Every structure is written in C-alpha cells, then in structure tokens.
Image (cartoon, rainbow, N blue to C red):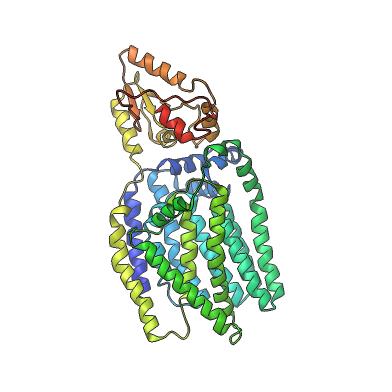
Length: 484
C-alpha cells in the first residue's frame, strides 16, 4: 500500500507539472470548447460530429465552463480533475476485485505520457476512459455481489462512458459478452440477462451517432487504408515513454495476466465457485475479447490513427492487470515481484517522461499575441492550413484581417464539409490570391501563420484538379500540400 500511495503522489506531481506546462489550447481543444459554447443546443446538435465526440461531452464541457469560465487556466483545471479521478477509481476498482493496491494500474496509466498529455486535455478521451475504468470496477462488483444499486450504477456508468467516447463501444461489448459467458456457465441466467440488457441498451443508444457518422458525406476526407503497421506504430507511442522499452513491459505484463487468468479458469473454476473467481474469469475473457474487438473497430472506422485513439484501450487493459496478476494466496516471491515492478516504474517512468510532459500543446496563442502587437490593420494574416484557424480564432484579437488556406466563413469547429466543397471547386484559392494581391499592391504586409511548401527553383508547379482527382481522389492531404 505504501508503494501505491507513493505512486499516487508522484502522479499528482506529474499532473501539476503537465497542467502548468501545457500552455494554450491546441486546435482540437479549441474546437471542443467553441462547440460547447455555441449559442444553442440546436447548434451543438448540428455541429458535434465535426469534433469526434457524442453530445454528452460538449454538454459536460458547457456545464463546467458555465461555472468556471473559458480561460486557459479554468480549462486546464478540467483536465487536472479528469486526471485526478484516476486515483479514487483505481483504489475503488482494486477493492472491488479484492486484488490489493493498484500496483500496475497507477504506474502504467498515471506515469504514461500519452495519458498525461491527451487524457488531461480538453477532449473526451480522458473522461471517457475514466468512466470506462469505473465501469470495469462496477462490473467486477456486480459479478461478486450483485445488488440493484450496483446494477443501476453499472448501467449509468456504462451509458455515460458510451456517450462521452464512442471508442468505448467495442470494449463495452467485450465486457458484456465476457460477463454473459461467465454468468451462463455459473447458471446465473437472471444476472446474465441483466448484463446483456446493459450492453444492448448502451449499443442501441449509440446507434443514432453511428448512423450520423457513417452517412456523413465529408467522411471521405478522413478515410485512408489502415495497415497493421500503422496501427502498431501509433499504439507504441500510446504505451508511454521510454518508447523503446514500454512495449516490452506491456507485452510482459499482459502475457503474465493471460497466464494467470488461464490458471484461474483451469484450476479454480470448478473448485472455487466464489464471486472472486467469477470476476477473474470475466477479466480474462474481457482482455481477450477487448483487444480483438478494438482492432476490428479501428479497421472498420478506417481512419489514420493517432496515439490518443488508443488511450481508452490502454486504460482498459491496465484496469484488468491488477486483478489478473493478484494470485491468491500471494506467494512471497510473487508479492515481491509485484512490489518490485511498482518501485521500478516509480523510479524510471516519471524521469523518462519528464521532458515530454513539459512540452507545450501549441504556440498559436503566442503567435496570435505577436500579430496583435505587430500586424497593422491594413495587413493580411494567412493561416495555413485551414484547420489551424480553429485555434487561431480563439486567441487572435488583433486588427488585421485574416484568412485560411482555403478560406471558410466559419472557423469555430473543424468543418470538413466546407473543406470538401472547396476541394470540388476549379479555383478554390481565388479569393485568397485576390486578397493577398490587393494587400501587397497597396504596400501592406501579408503574414503567414503555419508555414508553406516552397517548391524547388527548377520544379514544376503541382497540378491537381477538382476532387475527386484521378490521381489523388479525395485525399485532403494531397490538396493541402499542393495549395501550400
């Protein structure tokens, strides 16, 4: 317990350092806040698909900012509170599993640079992952000592995690199937029906979101072939620092957890009909199904992944390691290995991730302040590419007019539908070129934010036609490169 408490203290220190170092909101965070602060809920309902999360997340953020305001400091506090919730949930879960202190969950998540950076950002990944983690603990509690109150809490937590982060759906499906298998084999058919009902309710409630995302015509800009190599490269980053070592640590702990879970199933299933044995069998099956279902989910979505896409999977796996690696009765050597792992992680991982935790999320706030001080009212600011305009709008308070590449009339959220429309035009940058030319002709300056691709002196200008281009199709990256 002493080691777990020290790990919790170290985690709080890392959270504080991250909160003080993160700086301004990067474009995804700015988009989330600006969506949440729309004038009406109807506007939020129309625009939420562009910001990746179901309606509950912008509503949660809107409620929070109604009390705290929308300053960077207040919003960093939001991320800090989300991160801090890991501590009570970790101890609650281990108590529900009767697995001792969280010697694996706290170090592998709390010292994980991906969680510290993206789990505490103003996005739905952190809060959604924490609700999923709580759902795991409540499920274990329901398996061992089911009550109406626990079942209601489990349903509430599962629904909330679904409506905060759709990435939780395949993992909730894995938990539902695993719980049903264990309960049916134990001839607890009524409890199995309850587990299946919770899963069906969560899945059915997400259908409107899935339909809306899958039928959006602008989705074509985001879909790329996803290979196993691309998935693994981003997953490796999501496992934390040091990148060269953490995949092997995760592989070793997951392998140990699967072996331990198999021992429970083979040795204790028939000899011990306790709720604790059932919960461990549930954890073993959930780990197997969860990894497989999440892989199928990512392949089905067919988006190029980012490290934060794997955050909920990392938390899910880590949440199952403590119960699966807590053998009973604990042999002295085995107990020493668990404590030794936690002590080694406590000494190594915070140091390995220290520089990464202190990295600013963006410098767009500094750029906006510089332009406010130096750009004249007759100048023109060109923000390239267009999606940087989402965060630039939050911070820029200067007198010079600004446009994006290509230019849109709306920059509060990531309007991929407007980007798709621009890609279909013959001369999508005509308005921008005209404005730049008139600005320069009258002796004023054009400021470029974000950079540009300057061609080599002897290189031909790239040609690209209205989308879908015969060579590049609907690749937005190709269009942005040529326009730059």
